[in-house]
Image (cartoon, rainbow, N blue to C red; front, side, top):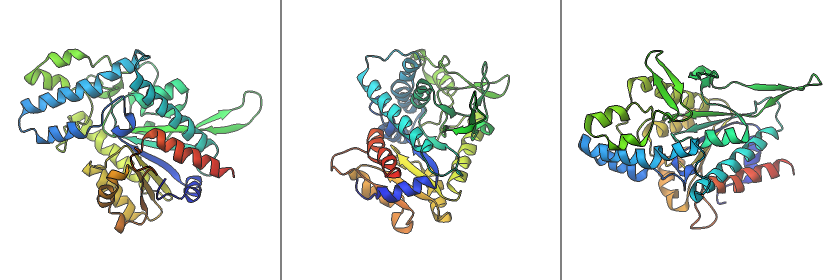
Length: 336
């Protein structure tokens, strides 16, 4: 892989607080990237035009997740390929956290995601890995920022031995399809079956559609981001959490499947890179995007930001590629 020293990266991982920023590219090929939808929404001049693209977003990105929750995609090749790549990533990252030599750093990784899908949650559930998604409770889980960053220690049944279990902090900056607002309690509750979203929305039009669509607690892929009042506070707080993690000493950030077109996130990332010299950022992208990414991330002005591309000219920097060519190699180097 061009531009990467795996020995150096292995040492960095051993001594850093690990963060990921992932975007729609990691959910391919099951779900499409949002570039075209975002361009169309930004170019739309009327609410009627926006409605067309909101429905496209609903139909192509949101509704397929209902079948994911219902386990109805056993014969869907694109879903199985995407699921496998998520599984490999989670397993390898878990091993990376377990095998780190440092006993001072917690065995946690922060995964900041702009994706609203349920792919990562369902994979973590199937693997029975522990993760924090901001919800607390069993019968009626309630979302709260205070629920992130909880550590879990396992005590042996027969001996008085305690060890920390790897935990994934899944922080969905743009909201999630699993979030459902309860007006009576003024809280965000967990809707793990996505029962509040169905294809009947496609048949609605005008204000009736927009009103129902706005009840889905996600940030739409457009420059003038639509934010319902209940989501405004959480959106800004989650961005603040992202910023604070990057400002910590010896923080490490991998960027995967994310174009850095989101101005808010790009500005926060660049500000952290400038103010925190101990922060290391590794942006993974295809060769065709390298020059554009270097310009967006101001690589010439920020020596702690690195752009990584695949060896092959036509190779895509997929989640599978990252797992096999970075995480697996880090584990190998750690035990040489």
